[in-house]
Image (cartoon, rainbow, N blue to C red; front, side, top):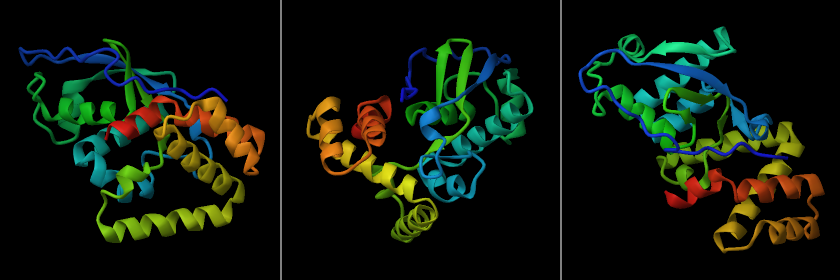
Amino acid sequence: MAIDQPRTGAAPIEPVVDGRSRTVWVQAWEDPALRGPLCGVDPRSRYVERFWLPVLGPTATWLIRRFADLLEADPGGLDLDMAEMATCLGLVWTGNDRCPLWRGLRRCLHFGLVRWSDPEVLAVRTRMPMLWRRLVIRLPFTLQIEHRDWLAEMAAADPSSRRRRHAKLVALDLCELGVDAAAIERHLIRRGSHPAIAFEAARWAWSSEGEILQSD
């Protein structure tokens, strides 16, 4: 399965320094790899509130949730006035790159939740990935335990998702050791993974999701 790859910083933000409004076109970024219960979650879900919020911070979290509301109402995309968005989130709009809204947007870019298709088109994930392990261990210990229990409960309800997640974790470990995607796929198949799951996990480990994780 082909996996959409976040391209953080593909088109840099060009802030308006005179404080005027900036309008961008916002469109949905659909990623088939995030459709499963243990692969992706709605930005407005409790999972995001509990586990992504400590990583992203409040501004970026509210921003990605607001994008989800807007794209649900206009799935074909919409023109968005960023100054108005800032006001709706209770933020001061200055139009420069130190504006709280731009800082929140840069957080979303860093974690691959949005990407610039070009300087005036912002693609936004309609589903967010589960936290990567290196992000989970940055959570307070109580949240780490809660996250483990949450995954166990979801996996018990969907065994196929549990197998996919396990394969991805093994694939990511091998990727960090420098093993190429084809060798990872063969290794997973030898360990009993279904060929489709092995292929998906190997591709995912070498996608930009893996690169973002390794750079943290």
